[in-house]
Length: 103
Image (cartoon, rainbow, N blue to C red; front, side, top):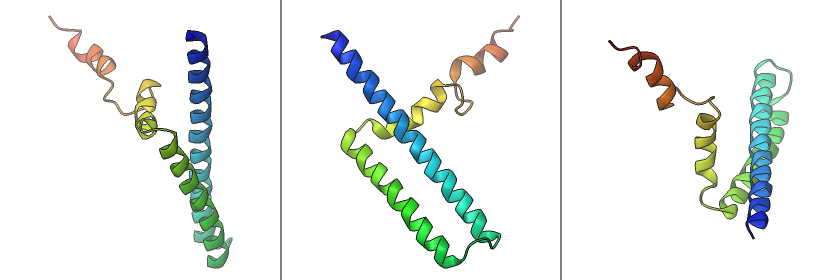
């Protein structure tokens, strides 16, 4: 039974990683799209059409995440800190440098 639960957890985490990766990719595409508009590489009409497509897909991903479970949004915020790429509020690292060198 534990093996099956572990397998489902692994599949779930892989899917969530894929969703996060797709969200990041879409966000990057939006940034590039804005740059192309700002530099005159595309017209406002082209921008509007492409932006709508990207935003619609982001909305779909958000809706899927809400259907998947309530802990979905919280995992996005927690994972960067767990990976060491988050904000400097990672307690143990911040405390080692200053407090550990006392008299």
